[in-house]
Image 1 (tube, rainbow, N blue to C red):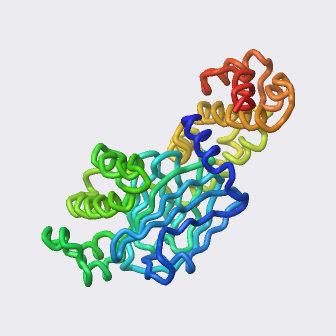
Image 2: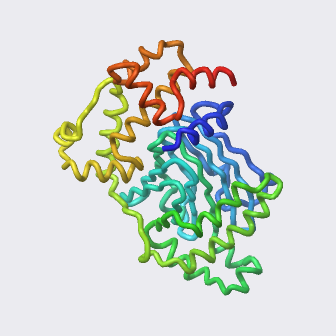
Image 3: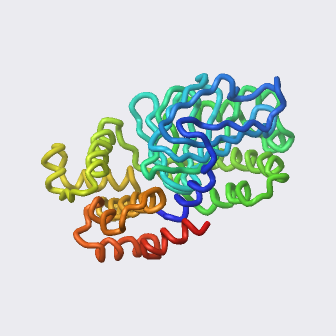
Length: 331
């Protein structure tokens, strides 16, 4: 977990309303969309922003900035509409249809039809995520195919069979994905639409050549990940206590090796490191929002002494708690 990413997204969404996702549309009223925003709804206890762009006939894109533990999505389902979600930062867990739980780290991509995610729960194990969703109506694209894809001989019927009718496909982070998506974030606002047109077509061509058997990310069933989420809830709701792996293993009837491996798959870090960074992130919030003495904050977060707390805080945030509080208040 990179603390600077969490701070950056917190600042980005500072003015966003709590308890909802703000949707910004860069589309003419009445223009047909792949996933119509008036048929799209989301629910969260946190907050976020979705910025939607028309790309080409049959292709829309949405930049997502999320600061929440979980977001529930509801929209029309289709076996011919392909959604590609690229996780730029944070971590994303997605409980989809038929019990599959997909987990993405920074740089990973998931490809699936909107049938799989029409009524789904996206979990943010780190409390934040930033990503880009690209929706492609393959029937529409087949009728009104961009010239470049026509020349490349793209077979949309084959794409439907390979990418829409099977299970979600997870593509691990790699240099090629970084080359495709990095310009979509680096481009100035006035060039964003043009880059989206170019890169969405490049992404389709990349998927045509991708062989899922060559690389894969581990997938877990929802039951298994839900148990890990229960352990996570216990750990994060009792920050003043320290639980051992052995205690948790006996309490939740899960062997220690499975507990450690699935926890890392879901949350991206070993338990001890994750909880150290989680405590520091909670400390940052307390330093920003309260007048509590640093020694009291240390005690509430399970540190025996202020010195041990300061050492852990500096290891994660690269500054002392007192320096962080002063830096934040001087903004």
